[in-house]
Image 1: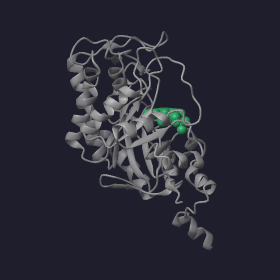
Image 2 (image 1 turned 90 degrees about the vertical axis):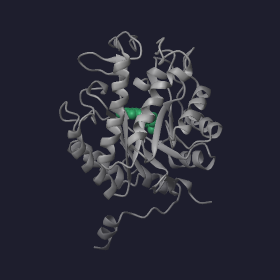
Image 3 (image 1 turned 45 degrees about the vertical axis):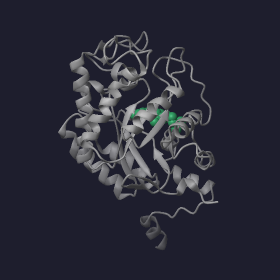
Image 4 (image 1 turned 135 degrees about the horizontal axis):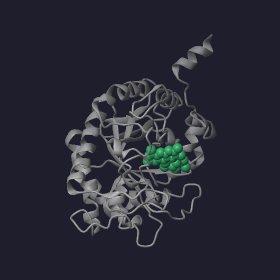
Length: 340
Ligand SMILES: Cc1cc2nc3c(=O)[nH]c(=O)nc-3n(C[C@H](O)[C@H](O)[C@H](O)COP(=O)(O)O)c2cc1C
């Protein structure tokens, strides 16, 4: 049986050489508060490309300054960010990986000076700030900011855009009834709570015809919160809107006990994939090649997103190949070295 982890995945016009995705991870490593890519980012992402990751999704990158999680987050709120991001996509692609970027707004989970915003004025917990309830104008401006961010991502040469709809950040705050108590057209039924996401997808698609992923938190793990079945419904809507893949994470919208174990979120990716008939990515405590291969072979997801294991081992794909006895050819530069 062929090793599925190392088979290509085609989405729209883009072919990813294998099924291994570097999951977006904020590194809070800008050298100051301007959101600019720096040497640290070039080294960090390019080393994972050299390590044979198929698709690198650059960390949650803020569509407005207020949408950062921390002051040191990457930004895509200004045209000034395009040059640094372009160099980053070039470096990633030179080493054979496809470059993607996650565009994001932190909402009430921003840890910043000044005002923070959310659908409703409810803090995440006692130690976090109370956000301001967004006006309709602020909602429209934020939707436009996602569109502008997509336009800049395109100019910077990214091949895939992922919208961050998970982990209790702004979009997720609109989706969940635990955080969205609005009584206007953006709150109430699931369809109304989905409206902010719907408008963002529409706005992004005005300027972006490449592959579009959305990350979701498929379970709030809390009474009265969202569950995987709600996300199957929303996955149908996203599919109708032209979303190409759902990257299925969970939790963090409200403080809750999350039962974690190897592959704990894979059942959600499986449910959405098979009930909404849309490609999915599985993420969460996927740490070895055998586990990743089983997820793919059993049709539970189309891609595996690897996060902390790739922080520990930038060459994780090689480690996985060795484990699966798959002959992953070394990059040409290394082979040249062997000949000396
Ligand atoms: C340091 C760190 C930063 C993260 N930042 C992001 C992020 O920017 N966007 C996101 O969607 N998830 C983020 N995550 C979550 C990861 O992408 C991933 O979903 C999670 O760590 C579970 O996968 P793992 O068990 O392979 O680490 C972050 C995780 C870590 C450890």
